[in-house]
Length: 226
Image 1 (tube, rainbow, N blue to C red):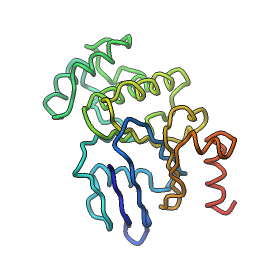
Image 2: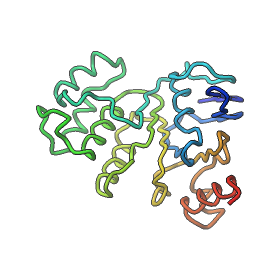
Image 3: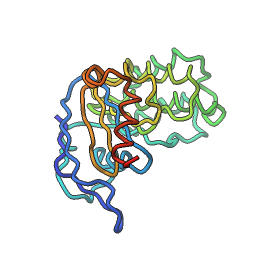
Image 4: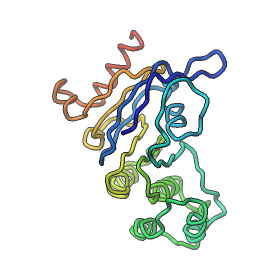
């Protein structure tokens, strides 16, 4: 169980997170973390994965293993896929080389070519694969679907669904809410540093008889007094 209790986080005089509480059962599922720019998504991710350690409240992030895929490239462009497979084994205790290789072999890639030579979409696939190849309880993906074409997005979604360790939780922040009804088992909506909703996606859609995208936009409009 991932538990967050009465979490507050400030940067200077600005309050980023305000009394956040969450319960997430440790079971096989994908959770969407949705919210406008500046809502507090990345800050929450950094706290869950122990990058930010000065906060008020309770977070039980010592009871599970985790890996954060940030919203920027973290693998040096001068490396090759072959060298990454070797280096990740040394750098990350939970890295599963066999699982990474299995996913990479499904793509038509030159393992000896520098990563800097790959397209933006292919770099995003590589970063996602090397993140999914971690054998952890919790995967945290900050905008992994940003600025990719529809074909690449479908590949990334399939990787997120089937490339993770079994019985793991993945939390994904994205602004691409349209057509995500079938991906997320649960959805969390955050705005102004507060949780506005945390529900089972199918139940939520059935109750409102509309798409997740429409529900999300309506909740944001209400929170922003539009």
